[in-house]
Length: 178
Image 1: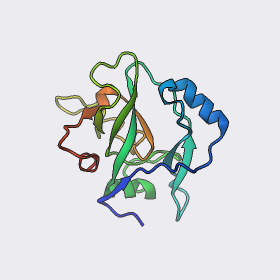
Image 2 (image 1 turned 30 degrees about the vertical axis):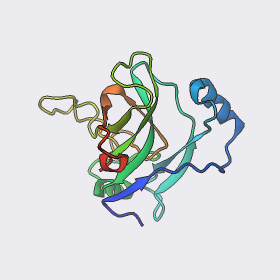
Image 3 (image 1 turned 180 degrees about the vertical axis):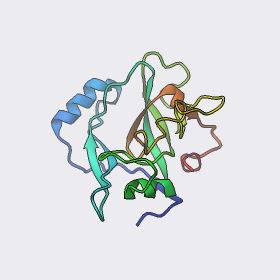
Image 4 (image 1 turned 90 degrees about the vertical axis):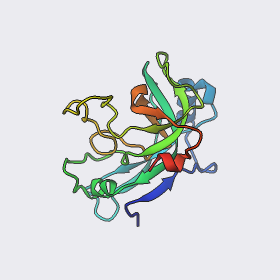
């Protein structure tokens, strides 16, 4: 059973079965990664006692102009994530929410207006992706990852460029995700 402070690392299963439609759609959306198939992520269903966390497959959506697709390499499981899974967090949790806020990975695709990140960059997620500086207010802290907004317990995470930060070479993915 997961505990707070636990670090989870993604691990793709090369032998898993995927349908051809998903493979075709992914090839159209990301031609430079045409061999990729359906992605996997975990979703929370708070009403399912005993097994609120379920693995699901999904097709990556097309990137927006300022969005970045990140191959998640490490995710931290925090006490807050346990509260989300138990639906005891202070705000209600919707079925199908992707949990976890703290993740790190490699940029695999960028939208046409992304200027500060490129494919191959190592990045970490920002807990409050809308808070870019100054005094926090309701708008800037809305959409916290993994509860109010979708989280990072997924093979591919899509965020606005401003919701990610570049990692220095001296920090591992695991260190950046904690």
